[in-house]
Amino acid sequence: MTDITPKSAASLPAPRPRAIGLVNWMGLWTLYLKEVKRFVNVLTQTVLAPMVTMLLFLAVFTLALGRGNMKFDQFPYAEFLAPGLIMMAVIQNSFANTSSSILIAKVQGNIVDVLMPPLSTVELALGFALGGVTRGLLVGTTTGLAMWVFVPMHMHDFALVLYYGVAASLMLSLLGMIGGIWADKFDHIAAVTNFVIVPFSFLSGTFYSVERLPEGWNFIAHLNPFFYLIDGFRYGFLGRNDGDILTGMAVVAGVNALLIFVVWLMLSRGYKLKP
Amino acid sequence: MSEPAPPAPARMRRGNPRGVWTLFVRGMLRFVRFATEGIGGALISALLFLAVFTFAWAGEAEPAAGVSLPVFVAPGIAAFAMALNAFENAAFPVVYDKLEGIIGDLLMAPLTPAELLFGYVAGATIGGLVTGAAVLLVLSVFVEIALPAPLMTLAFGLLGALVFALAGFITGLWAEKWDRYSAVETFLVLPLGLLSGTFFAVEALPPLGQDIILANPVFYLIDGVRTGAIGQGYAEPWLGLSILAALAALLWLVAWRLVVRGYKIKP
Image (cartoon, rainbow over all chains, first blue to last red; front, side):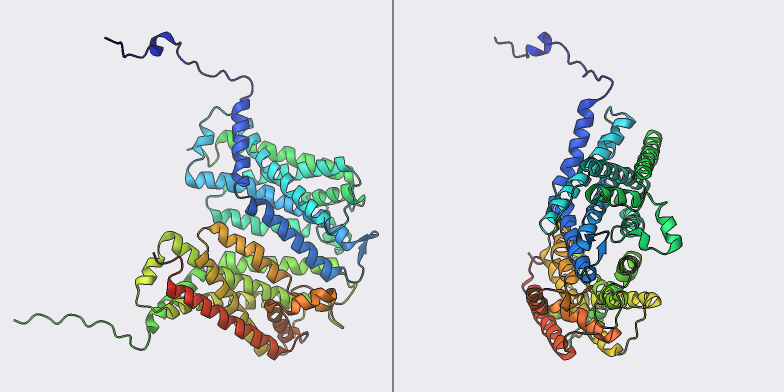
């Protein structure tokens, strides 16, 4: 007679839980990968569509405004406009990535799948935020390369371009997380996008130098963090600026620190996420 | 005792006006239900475009003699908002009804394909017109829109909204998922709407571009609305009207044939 009981059950040691050190690297990497694969799956909508839209804006605004050889500090209008449009694409898409990811997960109920695993609050925030940063940088790079075909691009200071690119996508990813956690349905996030994010990215100097604004408005523009993002990013390309660059870097870093704190607070309390 | 006579079926020898009316009202109710996003969103983006053009322009070059750029773009913004809204109004319900399976209720109802098409498209067209009018009204607070020929603006608006509603209906039939619908919107409607002289004069284009834009029917919509709104146009109004009418008729025929054949809506 043959013994049909599996030998392994008796001879192999019981499986042990995976030891997690200070940081759950595997969990963080998995969450990040999930966030990236989510938008890569629909690349046409998430990267190609904003690129085409920004190219259209470039064409339309150059045709409408560039005829009189309009210049901003020796730069033809198209060259002035291009960095602004790249930044606008980064802003809108970083926000869209994290907000839609969290909101869809909430509405469908699969948010528990990221709340249950052994991920700390910081790891959770980082996984989502880095996904948004990746989308923002990818959209920015693609849009920039596409514009380069039509418009000569300058590169005054690559380090600054990189700093503002990362800082902007991080800021908007964090804002997107706050929006996604706060919103109960898609109408809410659509309203925030249409009535806050898009107006701010339009009116913060993408299309013009804020010095052209009427007196009072000029001052208000300098209170707006988006203005520093666009102005600093453009300075990195062209070497011309409206605001002070050091002030801008500090403002952007400060806003990011504040947003990280808010996101951490929301996640650790489980605001609208945990029962 | 004799059995009670069976109820006589409704007589619909001359069409089914009540059915068409019901479908139309449903479309309008949907439009009203989503008015915040529909009209509100259109108004916000129209005001943003106007603000951006006003601040960026600062009086350098006039798009046409004696016309400032903000005045020039305002009718274009309104026409674009109207076209986009009419497209969305028509496409969205069709995709939604297909995905939710509601379309079966409409195919079962005693409506001929033409009646079904009319019910869907009429509501979308009216919604687009209302949105365009609202945008034009709000923009007229900030720029001077003289409206020398309101009937011409209305005629172009009506035909243009109809064209985009029909295009939206066909897109809705074709799209199996939301991805496809938004792909058509991003890669076809948006470029057509923005590159058709919405914000710039034909003369701003290089010669080849001028030839291309004159072959683009959407250009005549924008140009006609602008002629009626600020008296500043490039093409002859009658030419634009006939091109748009021909296009609407063609799209109607295509959409009607698709419904008759049950393209992607009947098993």
